[in-house]
Length: 357
Length: 249
Image (cartoon, rainbow over all chains, first blue to last red; front, top):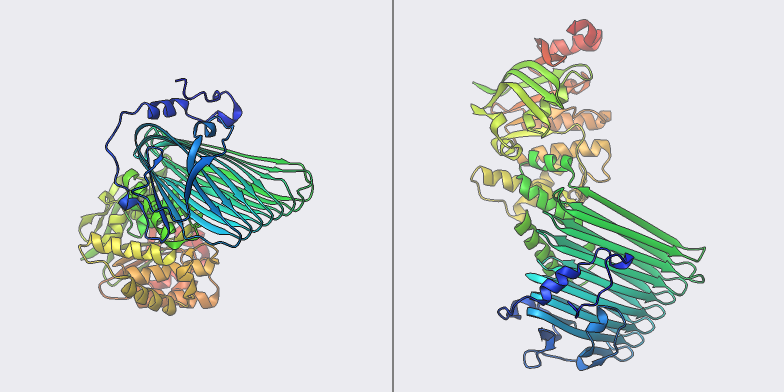
């Protein structure tokens, strides 16, 4: 399919990507439109409905969000989401109500870019939900000024197809970006991001990918510490059932003068069946000599001893598996600061467990 | 009537026979101590009764209140009133004690067709049991057994036993890892929760010292997968004096 023009899976950064899955999603026939009402959380602020890559102005409440062309990416997936998109630009010291974006796909391919630019000391929260079926491709450009703070939570709950997200973020001095993803739908996914952290910047980028059936989900993330005193945490949990595949590739790069960088990577996979696959690739590239970079990567199965312990206390095996699996992903979802959002994501994870176990 | 009846029980792990024709009957109101040297099959007996996967029964039968215990799933055995106190209680990161116990109790209640306890009712019960066993209330909120000392884990087992209030408890070396004070507290807990006319206990232990606090009605010596001698409480004292080699030979 020529529209894709994606790098070969022989290229290291794309080895776990799923171009066939994207092509199949792009070719999905038009389906019934999805009602976004149930997908918005009970939060004040902007509510944006995106139908097949187009902002539905009539159904949306834009608040401070504007619609305008977003500077393009040169990334193979990101550049396909070019042109007009949604933008959140906040001036110095501004604090916005949460922005909720619900992306509804109804078959075929859809693309949309977005841009979030926060000036010094500005703060914003963005919650995004992907639902429906088809190929949803997004590009997000983030620019955070000095001490600006952005919290994002993104849940992928499409019933089928594919969601590809390309994100490129620059964090200014002392800026903070916390992004948590939850892949708990039945669609394939690729979360592809590059974060550049400035002096003393704080970047948290992680989440939980839950896969089942033949599903394939992956994240490919690089955090670059370009200046000293930065902190980054990449905490990812992958749970794979049936014959599905979850892949986590997380990279930390520390530039030569980025001393006192504190980078943490925690990649953990859980196989619910032995036919499932979890790929983990923690990568460190450190050119500075006074840094702390902790990294851990483990794949395992549910602790049989814990399962029996719980059963012997009266908890049926399926329920015990669900409790242990839920505990396994809890670390990642607990990073969501807003309680309403955290509870909604937890409920999605529970619904996934209910379905799969 | 016998609450538990084990007849000619043979069990193996990975094809290796550990229990080799064990028979034992326990009536309501009785406390039986099972003593024996390392490797005799004491813990295996506990796990077989609890239904741990990998412990395969090749011969014999176990009936509990007239029901074929071996045909029940582990959680069904719990709902039927069987409690297995672990020698090494398992740590469960990310699951709080309160959540774990409430799930467990309500699952058992559901298995018996009883209504679930509300959060408030459950907390009241959990707090009372924790207090009775000298377990810090904060530990109820902490992940199950994570970061607990050996003694705290064992107390936590007894708190769990108090909450689910079983009919029959198999306590596998509940005394190991306890200091003298904790031993007394745990012993008191066993007496308080289980020393009742309609309940029974199988106390698996290496040593006599727990039996100073929990007086057994019967003592059995388990050696090489069989019960080789049975007697009253005095048998434990004899074992303490003369060792297993002298008594079991």
